[in-house]
Image 1 (spheres, rainbow, N blue to C red):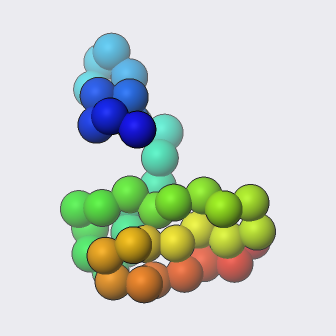
Image 2: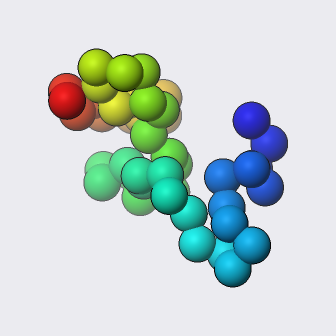
Length: 44
């Protein structure tokens, strides 16, 4: 996805950001959320 697709017109985002890194979005893989930068994982 292009970076502009992550943000709404008013500059907000619906994606969750990594609590460890703070500057990357978590990838949604259905059963988990995963950060590709630091390998942080939250299981749903």
